[in-house]
Length: 538
Image (cartoon, rainbow, N blue to C red; front, side, top):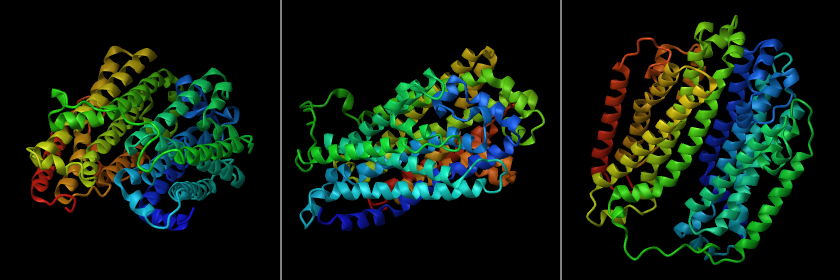
């Protein structure tokens, strides 16, 4: 354990900005949700309509067992509908942080240098978990403050201090549990990417188990209890609070940390418990190009994102069968009409919101994909390629081509999934076709975000988080812009604002052409800058 506190301070200093961004981004979901839900569903009758909507099987898969439906207060709405998304986000944060401070450090060789000093064998793993714990406590603390502040002036919200603390404590412990899962997977494999993938697969399996258990019975079945993601909602905050499910999460954390410690003692530094398979002596002909290499590295990511977004699109499309309930809610409710549209255009309004959601998710994939180019350069893996007969522009073009192909594939899957879901819900073929075309229309906006990220990387060797900032701003402006009455110029700062709405009866191609031109200019600037700047320094 020698040197643990020094490594903790180093880790927190190194990731202070990263942790702050995660904490703010995850916690802001609650005040946005509370304020928007209070504006859209101001009366008990309105909230009961919402309760009927989120009681459908498709909604249960995405949100959870749904407690307090018979008296759907704002507190119950917050716990049921927003907690699952925030919990998944902080679990992803915990996995990435745990792998970053353990396996990634070993893979780059930095751990060997650190261990050459007076540092104990267990110091790195313990310090990594402490960093994960601090990050989750930051999210829990900020979420507690924002939830209480948002619900303070709302009568009958049922948002109390004790329930809020229970909710945020359960969230933090769940994040810590999946951070501990990542510590275990970091002992299994030699590569950080594989360790993160295994931990993400465990998170995905937990989500599937929770969803399958929750749709079997009201308030979840026995199967639900086999998923750590279910335990925080089984505490029933803001409805009928019970603390004992926290003990399950805490016990899981202790067991996983013990397993990680035991496995760490059984392997050599830099090695994994599972040795990698030996590769071929010579590469296949299909791997003899920068594009083939980039595709090989990202193909699993494309499949995972495509499957996840496609399933979400399919389930979301089935909500079209609930339009009559939404119509009842919108009538006489100006705030709801600002989100979903007028009562006679309720299906178009619903489709617009869902298409925006899917477009933003596809953009998240595209940003993560194009950032792989910077990761390859920063890690030193790109430099040996440039020492051979590979031009810089050819290499960068291959990275961009993989991102473009992957983005188109994921967007097509999203479009087809949403259209099929609505066909199952009973909408006409014409509406389903319009939905598919409207989803594909987001491609130029996604290209602008990718171009902005690539331009900063090509010119300066940095990304500055511009892609994620545009993504978050597009979400806020697209979903809450009409509600908060943002000015026109502020809405136009988002590239997604210029995409024609599916409800438009006479859409024009002009905005899409402008978006395409902007994306092309940004990409051209990226290639020019990448040819001229020094590698790894900008």
